[in-house]
Length: 167
Image 1 (tube, rainbow, N blue to C red):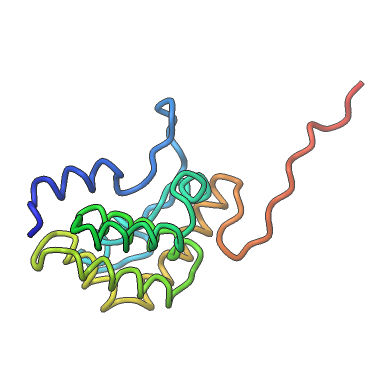
Image 2: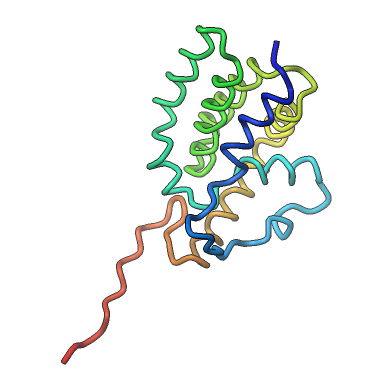
């Protein structure tokens, strides 16, 4: 059985999004501009979107390796760690617009989450609104890329800006 306070503390240590170091403020699009009249989806997406997706992928690892680690934690009876690892993998799959992988990882996370828990609600909402979640994530990350100058999912890498002529 999961202990809700412990569950929340561990999950919130990973945060709803990776925050920049040094207290910098990153430009980010308003999620409310992509989600109208669906507070449950808005809250779930706030938790599942990454502000620095490329850095998060480098820091967390690939979805496949996170899933394997989640499976190991689950086999050892550590459902909270398994959920966190499955969710982390799902966040990266969502960023990469891999709908089937995102769905499968959410389902795994749901299997190790206490029914009625806040995270259970996120999983159920995202699975119910899967197509909309993937659409919103794609738009959010494209806009995030436009604001930050970093390519979004499915976009070509942007060339480094040259400093201009010298001399």
